[in-house]
Length: 448
Image (tube, rainbow, N blue to C red; front, side, top):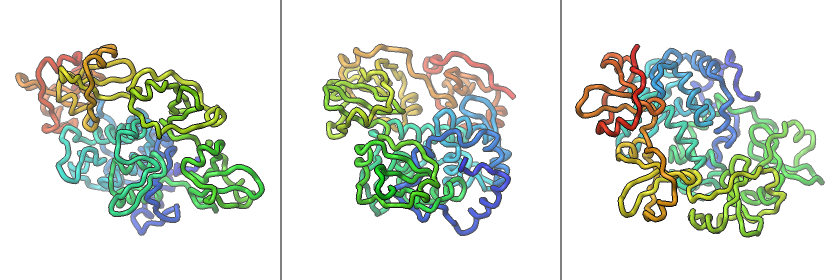
């Protein structure tokens, strides 16, 4: 593995971080922070390797334990690892984010606020943080969820790959989904530069002789390569190449120099690209699948016809044929009945009612709500109501008992002493009617 997995030598890297930065890439490029593969490669570190990393960096997290969103007491390394696996986000990214936001990886004596807002999730420049997202485990969980959500729902957010923006008074054109996701998470150039610097010192691969991000070819040979993650990635389709590049950008290199790089995965269409073979059907490309979608459904979803890329069969031959998209909401959306004003979470052909506004605010703090008619809503099959997400603290007005949601069950916390010993915050409790609590089946009593 080219990643920094020799943790016995990591101390030297940590010392380097505390001195003037010597980045492995030539300089910070605001258009490209890390690759999509680096963001989503959740297999870079095991839980043991994360713990070793925390011990060598010698910050307070090496000995820190608290309650996770599933109601179990865990080490910080276990919480980081669990979130990385649940949401398919690189644990190294979560470590870099913890350092960027509150310095928690190297800090010896963090404050309660450092733990409570560890990843900066739901912390805003112009208003206070959202208290229901307070707590170390919740911050880790929601940060990983959020980065994954950016990748799976790019059309819902301000910053997208390939678009031109002015951020922090400078022009920025995110070159990939990962970079766009980071700007949606932190809409400042300096904040993302700090993340990049941490990444470069701790996790970035050593550069070869050819600069990262270069487009190269060998003289008198067909084929263009992208140098990325210390590998050479082929373009197997001119269509994919021309989406973001020009042939004038390609440089000629020596064959021996290029062959020093391991061959990586072929450069493909970005996830959720819409392509057409010139027939009465288009495909959505995602996770190595091509999912057919009719023009009628395309229009129902509200996609822009200009987003369709005309391709040849060979351009998408490497994709497996996936399930047909027969719903306007293949990845999930919030819909509101124009008549009753009821809100539903709709995914595919299933709708689940959200019967209380506290569930809506807690589970879907950023989602847009789409208003549609009762007739349109009736086309979706109704399932059980949405419950509070795991890790939420609940209480009813007529009882002093506090519950934590774990695997959709309400688990009572035995005493105030146990509540505080497990690191929960009193102001994170959500007061709800008893019928809303009863959506969750009773769980085990939380006790030490």
